[in-house]
Length: 281
Image 1: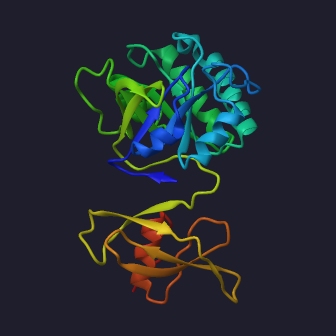
Image 2: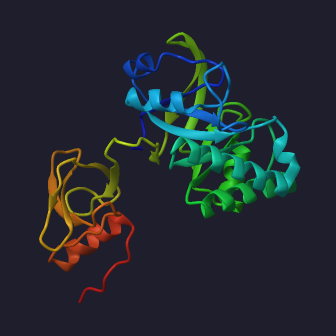
């Protein structure tokens, strides 16, 4: 499920807030910890269990995961980044999770050589395993990592950010308070970012060059109804947030491949899906 600017998510560690209360309060997802033991159960542990993940999904919430073990673990450099990524991957696989894996830089620091090596190894290892990479930290970390490592997603904390928000940030962690019987951190979504849910139909962000200004982003929903065509493709309806509808074809269970007769419209859809453009006479 794709979360967009203006939506909110909660993160928490040892608390276990009522997830239905979070959903009713308007939260779209939660961010939880992976780490030491993939077999952990609900005994107040900071680490998410399979039981908790199931409850998150049942409440209609999306999930993102962050790895943290020891505040200054990133100072262990490259070996620490590799080991922690492998641990995060093992735990994510145990949960059946296929989403973003964040590495936490939970203290005020610049991107030192050791922190760079830690995050770079974390990044390449999780990417090699098929996950998206992300980093949690203050404004200096977010800006530097975006330039030096180019991870996929950035989660900035209000701490160690000196009142600034990086342009690259997708999530902004803000205030902490009590809700649903637990302590949560409130986070604002600043830019589109996927949260994992095993059953909720994904959304796609489309840049419309046809019906609105080219710079305006529209959200479209792949509706659950599918029509299998004679050529083996699946037909979906695209529903823009202004009510405009389009139809396009997509490979079954694959990434959207837009196929229409007009070459200009075809390139519009290809551009929206991040696909190579076709030459047009």
